[in-house]
Length: 357
Image (cartoon, rainbow, N blue to C red):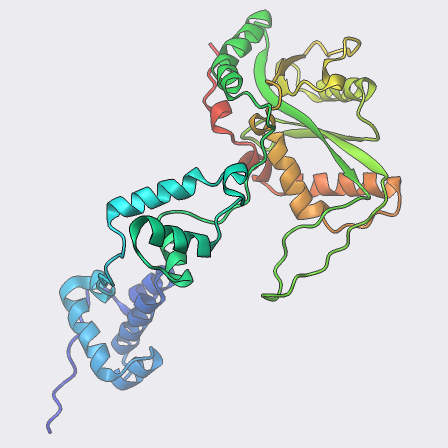
């Protein structure tokens, strides 16, 4: 059999260009094909170039033909239709709605769907049989994932929360009117307990084996009082040994003293007793704006606490109160050193959209 000359490769892209595109390519198979073409353009034999990319010479020739005809797009695998879905689009939408509606522990006796429960639900409601693996792929394709619920107090008034969000701009505008010579900034405040009685967090470990983490049983505690400017890395914190009106007053005085000249802060916070005590002296450059009751989800500082605990404070063993205080300070400083972290954690849409007139 006579072997003809190797098929020519289009040269509008040089070998260096193909290697650069391969480095930028997210699909590993496309990247390997680009490298094979680059090696062939650089003079490597077609057989060696194909073998280095994990293919045979005939396969490389097929990709050369597609590359010559379609360019980089020709190196991508054609989409495969796959097996038809067992549920129609309408059934999938109805199934997703059932999952999102969830379960009522009082009515149903259980709190959450397991995969086997979803398989049974699909068969009972729609007459479609799924195994566990197929059901997992289905719920993933529906945009669902297994998540831990965000806690909400049973007395939370969602109507009051919406009313607060709508009225926040007017409240800030009134504060700005009272201080016309100042730049008004919105900050948020909260405090968190950190103590010897510690907590665990998620870690990577062997499948099927539950990892062990240190959890202390002693009770010495300190409190981090913090204020952040949402959507920025600006933050201020004090570590104090109690929650009281006196501690809050000390925090406010130190916070007010840290603000630049010409700035007035509207400080968003909850209605805890030590926040609302009548004998607290609020600095002249700070005005307090109180959240609706039972509304921690409206305060972006809550996400800061979660990150601090998950990242820096879990599985810690503090010898005494002094060690707790040092651990709080170290955790806060590490957080502040992560550029962009506070801004990301506190970038709440409803605060971002506030316009002060």
